[in-house]
Each structure stands twice: as structure tokens, then as C-alpha cells.
Length: 171
Length: 171
Image (cartoon, rainbow over all chains, first blue to last red; front, top):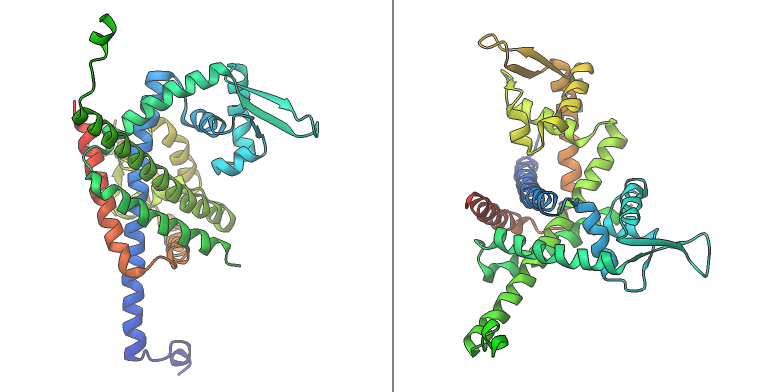
């Protein structure tokens, strides 16, 4: 009887919704595994080509891509937020880009404690060259996926992204 | 006239297909950025929870997940292929799991040069506990995405994955 108290008899309704819940769990897991497989597959291939063709890593390219949109530069502290990486992981990447002359890092005129990173002319040239290759590699990899279904899939991923963001903001 | 030879006049048809190509490039880039944003968002959150709740990293969990499907163990060399990571990156992860008693690594009886990795009882217990949390975190994160659209999105990602794999196998 003590056992019966701990696990009360399951009503048909509960059992049914238990099955539905189980099926939904499995569908969510399948979606996540596929999503991860797709992004890993494409990312691994793009990384490999970047390394082979330009001797450049993806995180370095991602930093340049952010700065390409900001002609007047960006507060250093903004970069980790935009790239969803930790500031600690970003420091050696930024250091290396400064060393190589692709970006500059200077104190802000308004507040010397704030650092501004900005792309150099050389950095912009290198970025444009790599971005062009990045675009054509991507086009090559996605060529077999029907063009008229691209926007539909992007739309569903948009909805997924919003749902996940909302879930993360719940207390 | 020499210039005209290098860049021949564009016929209306060519110009049109150039525009289509440009639009397709942009649609492909949008898809890729959204795909990457979704997987990064979910993965970052799952990693964070793994670290906080279990003091465990995702690559270690991924190794256990592979071994959970192989009751008689797995040839060590199979792991990097299945996890799409380099053997070099995997070595310290396997070493650490062996040290912690979650897996064993022993020479094969058939060929002493081949190593077999196998989950221990303790490893299986820890994996099951973490997998359960992983499942409920994922369910929580994806709860806002309509359940009846899960399989549709998974199907489109399947098609995308096949298209990319085909493209990668082209010479």
C-alpha cells in the first residue's frame, strides 16, 4: 500500500498523454540531432577549406565579419556578445588579428578604459577575399538543396530560434 | 575593343540568371546563418547546464552516448569518425573518461594493436542520469516550437544534410 501511494494508478488519460509526451520528446531529440549534424557537417567543411586555402581560422573570420559591418569600429566588449563566445576565448584571437595588422585596438576618446576595435584597410581586403570564397563554398555545398525551399527552411529555423530564446528568458 | 573581348556584352537572359544567382546566394547565406545561430544557441545552453549541473563537458557526454549504443564496446578508431572530430582532439577526452572510471580501454583479443573502448557500469549509470536531464532540458528549450511542425523541420534538415553530403563527395 505504501508503494501504491508513491505510484498512483495511471488513468487512461494520463497514460495517453504520457505516450504523446514520449513521442514529442523523441521528435525533439531527432530535430536537435539533425540540426547539430547539419551545422557540424557544413562548419567542419568550411573550417577545413579556410585552413587549407587561407591558413585562417573560423573564429578569426567571424571577428572580421562583425567589424566589416562597423566602419567606425566596435567597443571590444560587444564582440563576445555578438559572437556568443566568452571574452576569455576571444582575447587571443583579437591579439593575433592585431599582430597580423588586420585590426587595430585603441582606447576610446570618450573613456580611456573602453577599447575600440576597428578593421584596417589590409584587414578589409583580406576579409573581402575570404568572404567571396566563403560564399562560393557555401553555394557549392548547398547546390543540391532545392532553391525554392531555402526560404521555407530559413523561416522554420527563425521560428525555432525565437522559441528557444523565449524559453531561455523564462525564469 | 580589347576590353569588350574580356567582358562580352551581357544578354538579357544572362543578366536575369545573374540576378537569380545572386538571390540564391543570399538565400543560402541566410539559411546557413540561421542554422548556425540555432545550433549555437541550443548547444551553448546545453553545455552551460552540463557544466553547472554535472561538472561534465559535452564532448565527454558525446563519447558516452556513442558507447551506450555498443554494449560490447567499440574499436577506439571508430569514435573520431562517428563524432566528426580528430583523433588527436579525442585522446585527452578518452584518457579522462578512463581515469574517472566511466570507460575502459583494452587491447582487442583478436589484434593487440587495436584498442577497444567500453562503458563501465558506473559510466552507464552516470550517462543515464545525464541523458535524462539532457532530454528534459531540450524539451524545455523547444517547448515553444509547435509539436506538429517538428517532423517537417527534421525532414527538411535531412534533405539538407543529404544534399551537403552529396556535394562533398563530388570530385
